[in-house]
Length: 506
Image 1: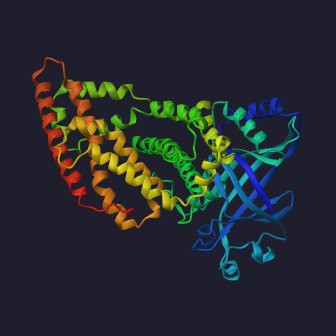
Image 2: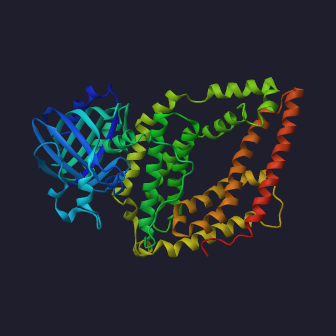
Image 3: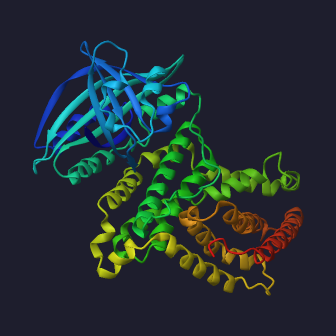
């Protein structure tokens, strides 16, 4: 068995001629291997039993020789792929599951039944260029460039990927080379394998953005440190998933999901401050703040688009004031273009941030400042810690939102970040608790959070109307005031209702 430790990059055609020079400047020696044409077929059952177990099974033929490969469930973290891999020679093109050691399979897997129902799902065919490099410290890294296509039925998608795999030596050398590569434009870290892309193509299930950020999956016996790792890993994957969704089909709501993932990562650093010293995350937090600032316009852009949609109830009212419509259209013109966002996601700074987060996780850099107290805290079951964290969080929030006080729109706007952080704590640790109780408690507060989101845009529109000597704009501003009052009234009802629901963590 081999365990792959590799980083995957998606590259443009313009970058390909630069790759030999990039790796030569990094390496002590470079061995350029002959190019090979690889034909690969991926197999599964009609009910996708291997896919359900996160097992990849393929045959590969090149130079009149064939092999069959099993890749078992592994770990993908910010572009770093680690999976157990088993390879056997193959006579002919029909794979044979029974040839593999029976001990490699997950418990309970019905190997013989699956073997009888296998058929080719999709293929990947590409030209592979390979360089084996040795660094000054003696590490050996294989650099692979694959250019070709993934095909299923009559559907085809291009492949243009660069992979760097650690063959021998320190993993740090792999990350150092990765840092050099992402310093070029038109190179970005890749999350999805060729197999994942092939399955989506074969099953006609394109990658779709999530409707919400959801919950980090945690086993009940997870320690606090394990929960930290899972939450950061979840956040990185969420950002990368929606980055890819944006490339597939650009939309403002997809960009909002990117910001949700960034916010969850930032919040996780704060949530686990028992074991994460701020000094170990200072540079990361600075870069996360930069990325959020680059996308800060997205929220208002979504609301402006919504309010000026012909299907929206506000459309006629806003459209009755040409001056306001013109201001909104001018603002839309100032928004970054799709090309601008593509450049952001290809930029060295963005990809170095993802790479730095991955390095921070893989190297467990938060441990560098630990004493005995942090070691003990890290081993505590997170299920024991979560109620204390939630209880303090929500008691603090209730002090800011006392039941007997009537809140104004300014009160809500001022408390927006505080509430969103409390909800993010639930996203990080909420999976430890019963789903129905959790949802019942969170729904009123999610309604309030969405109300705050809309209030901020109504306030933005009011500011656009203010200070202009125009009767129609004055009428619109008055109408926006009434809409804000109505929205605050609805939020107050949700807030008062929330006090009657028992916290799900108690």
